[in-house]
Image (cartoon, rainbow, N blue to C red; front, side, top):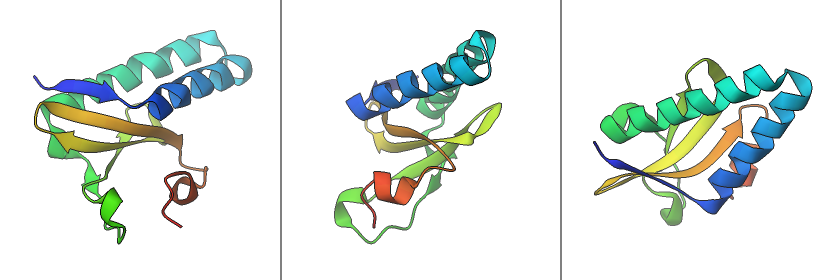
Length: 105
């Protein structure tokens, strides 16, 4: 199985989403969110081409892919393939301006 590398921004995203979910949906939901993101990361490490490759014009974004967190489909994982696995760039809610957050606009 490939490795999962998380960018600092992705780690911050996970903490922010956990806190939001704990405060608004309860600690059980927030814990389940973290378990499901870990399961999704593991799936991507085993099957890195699972996500949809985004057609982006900026060269520095080449190869960026998107995948949904199982059970939390409004949370999107943005990642890139690596020789040894996947690199998790961000974990964003679909309602966020993820084009802007990723610097695509």
